[in-house]
Each structure stands twice: as C-alpha cells, then as structure tokens.
Length: 236
Image 1 (cartoon, rainbow, N blue to C red):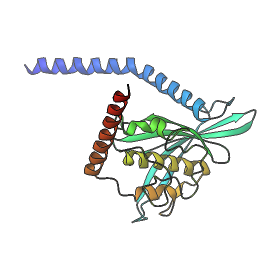
Image 2: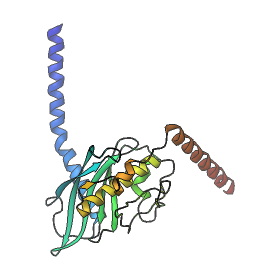
Image 3: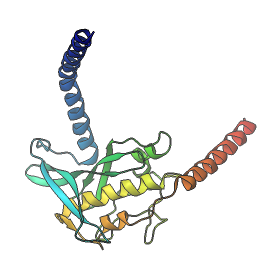
Image 4: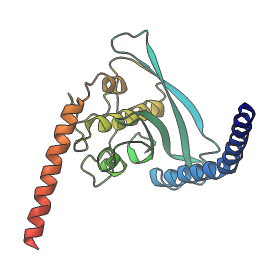
C-alpha cells in the first residue's frame, strides 16, 4: 500500500512539473503583452524599447510611529523616448488593497503630470473595488489625470486634505490605489526614502473603514441602485 501511494505521489509530482513547464511560457508571454499594451496606454508615442531598458528602484517608507521601521516598495521605471527625447515615464508600483495586492502602472509627463494609468493586477471585490480600473481615469468620478501628486500626494476626500472622490463603498481600495500612485510618484522624482510627513506615508496612517461600515455602505448603495432601477422601469 505504501509503495502504491509513493508511486501515485511521484506520478502526480511529475505531471504537475510537466504542466508547469507547458504553461510557464504562455503565461509569461501573456504578461509581457499586457505590460506592453499598458505602456501604450499610459505613455505618449515612443520609439524605444521601455521594457528592455527598464530600471528598478525601491521606495523605503518609514513608519510614522517608529521611523526605525521601514517598509520596502519595489518599483519598475519605464522611460518612453521619442527621437532621443524623454516623452514620459511609466512607473509600476503596488500596495495592499482590500482583497490583496493592487498593482498599478502610471504614466507621468516629464513635468510630473499623470497622463493615464492601467491596473495591472488586483483581487478587489467585483463590482466594487475593481472599479479602480476606470474610476480614476479621465471622465471618471475620481479623475486624477493631469494631476501632479507632489509632496502631499493624492488622497480621498474623506481624509484630511484629500480631494479625490473615492469609489463608492470601496474607500479601502481607493486609499490603496492612491497610495500606489503616490509611491510611483516618489520613484518618478527619485526620492527613495519617504519620511513620516510624505504623501505616501500619510496614506498608511489612515484608519480604514471597519467591515461593518463597509457592509453598511454597500447595502445603502444597493438600495439606491435598486430604487433607481425601479424608477427607470416605471418610466419605461
């Protein structure tokens, strides 16, 4: 019996290894295509190879309550060049959202204005937090394009000094998204060590909504949506 189980385990491991080898390259190709497509969205036209020429950097964020504690946020910097001139930089950064890691690619003009962004990966709630993929774009309620995050950074309007409209019932996701944008800006300007008064660190000190508050807000939004749907049906 033991020999049979050992044999089955060995075969299973071998099969998993084969499947992994077969899927590794297609997955890598799909990820590379997604990144290249995103670069075309967030940068002006360029004639170089940003991916091949990319650089890496790490933002060191100090804990506002204990500056001896530092959290590292790796970033990837892609420079867009046109006829030898810099036309923009795209920064890949991430932060922790409501459902897990939220990875963003944000494009900046040489002057630091946000051109556009692409949400590369996330595990946010469908229909709520996943609205980050468009909510902060031009025409969206929380539009951040043409903004320069600066030293103070971008923050949701619920927080002190914030002016950005958060995604309805997804304040935690909104804060995480803006934190990733602020981290990207720090990488853009080359400020790799962020202290307690910086834009990115201010985001960390915000108190997230409790599960009860989030659930209550979501329920309220659902009631509003249901009411709106009923009103529209009556009009028809």
